[in-house]
Image (tube, rainbow, N blue to C red):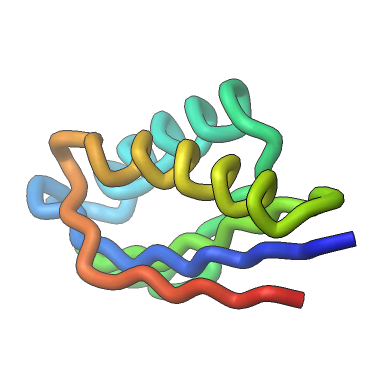
Length: 93
């Protein structure tokens, strides 16, 4: 069994409050959960208006399968117009 973790850091430029930020994050998180077999949470910067950090986790039988699923989920985050990705970190267990 392979466990893959992707930590994605980003900036929400148009957020003027935590409510604005959370509406953007909720829409992205919901789309990722609905389309792909990953778990996603906001793991850091919950009290900052424009910064965010997500942790996505996927479990599978092969590293290639897990990596593909996480990359597909990442494309939703990366292609969102209200968010700019500033960093990505991978971890394997």
